[in-house]
Picture 1 (cartoon, rainbow, N blue to C red):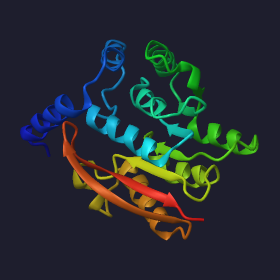
Picture 2: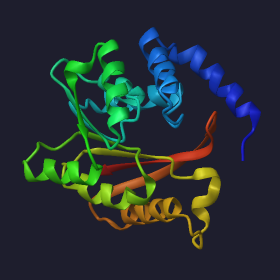
Picture 3: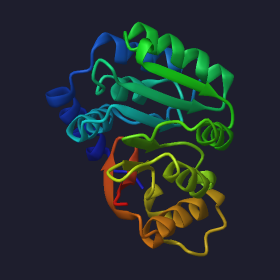
Length: 222
């Protein structure tokens, strides 16, 4: 389900408020030229992530799902001078494109890209005793969202903010009988958020250039 007016409004908001620079535009162009799927957050939602992280005063950010580094640029730019972003990506080609995009944007010195299965990378971070993250953005393969949430919680502290993207999928997430692994993964992700006594969470539905979707927003309370 998609309304052309949603895209028109997204374009208007982005032009009025986001004002992408050359590095962000080049990140999108180079990702498209390399054949990466066009599933990155739109500009206004990239700015939204940036603002959330800045409002929260995040110094350590974890991103699950790098793709071409577009959202990573937005998140890295939210960090203070001594901040750090750790971003996880499975595909080597995506890592290569993201690294080049981050370097051109001037934020590569703040970012560690960990290549491999995200669950494995998360488990390694836990085993290494990584310091907890202040802000976590989950935007990877949806069937594994429940796994990512459980592992991310082990890398959290009271006050950590967790954002999960693409949790409406045109309303399909409302269908409990769906055989789609992505839908079932998102439903379990939402249910785990609601059942976990450490979390206070909600979901906001969105419409825009990417259609009808939404994001989950949670804070770790203890």
